[in-house]
Image (cartoon, rainbow, N blue to C red):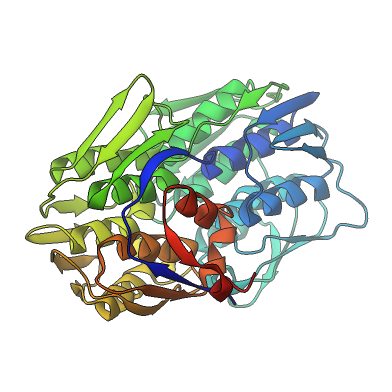
Length: 427
């Protein structure tokens, strides 16, 4: 485990936002199921993305890495590597939940394993499907999970408020079946933006799904993925950290974002504006400037990944902020509600943990101190940004957790003028 000591200092300048991890996962899988060779450009090889690359290789795709591009020869007939009877997902929930239905298409016995909190994250929606469709599985609590069977076409009923990843996993697999299928949601869909991303990527690869008001998705069978060249846009969930940095005391310009993106985390722009932040697009560049912000009521149901950095921004805004509808954050790489309440309190914030959210009374400055990342990339990055408005340095234990999604986070932090004790990072 590494740690980093950060001296409080404003961040300023231009930043190239890393590619969307959510879109990368989807594009790699779609290309891997295609008949032909696709080039996926603007890919960052984080641990999560490597997990999906390795999973698709196990299922028969041929994937070559060339700098920040991937050349993927698809396995439209799904021919798993005969020596690959296990798929290791590291800590990537997207990899696990997207790949499970695809693996079942092979009819072969495949075991899924993982690390850290992924072993505890729920798979109940799939377990219910396995029981309903007579698909063999073997598991204890969490992973490992072994599956074998044939995914049938037909009707699939899922809750919409558990995780959109289960819905996306089925949308990858069901178009390849002989018969038509439908996915019916039995409760209101949350994280709608992630479903939009899935449907957009599938459409690019020639897979057509009819969306009936986000209540039902109709999927024709016997469809074929077609190869395509695909460039991944910048990631709003990662941009959010540097947007907050600009608002808290600087002038940060973010390059590589799609102003008209379907990413749910694009909501960061609306939330920051509502809190009084100076943020705007100009010629395709998103700028965030130092602002006096105020509290707000933030509904996190459509943008849960923004909560850690929004908790930091709220801690340094005037008045009270309530973050609501965020209970699912307790099932992420860490219990993110508890983690942010615990660690921001150590820095001197006035923050109270609720069952499904946070109540935060802002201050002009925090004190600084020693905090822990809880092994969670978003906690580590959020606490790093909090250092900007601390009176004393911030030391973050477990700072290497950023490698899960944003390996170059601290390099970019330095490029914007941040001051780090690199010896403390163990390099």
